[in-house]
Image (tube, rainbow, N blue to C red):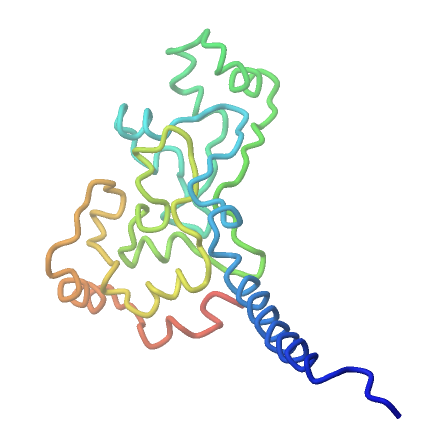
Length: 218
């Protein structure tokens, strides 16, 4: 039986094999790293809100503490989204006719809560508690970035598991004094690792358990 393909076709077979392996590797690499893309994680991307609320204006400009609006952040898993009554405690007296605040006035008038778009929305299979992190000396800025410089709110970190594990594996590099947790201008000392290790011991951080799956995934 005569040979259908000549020897010159061997190069095509070799290229097909190498190309197939390279293509599969490239596809696998994309799938494994796609969550690192800002386009997918939404890092640095403000989202549409019913009211263009500016943390920069309220925190840096007016000096309002995080806990004034996020009232449950120190005592529960959820930091708390402020009800309209909190907004109106100020805006019933100032900027009372501002057009951009009409949704707030309508919400208060009609007794219908504003439908804010969540910026930091973890998957349902991830268990996170704000109160534990705050009690252990992890500042708001560590996860949420410099909120006091954000005219609109966006994610500063991916919140991917590998990012969380950076802190869980070396909490001494991120921990700060409890009295500085809500301070957006806090600067880590030059000896952060050594000072952080002292705080780890002081606050009783269980470093041996921080990387157990059950800590975040019940």
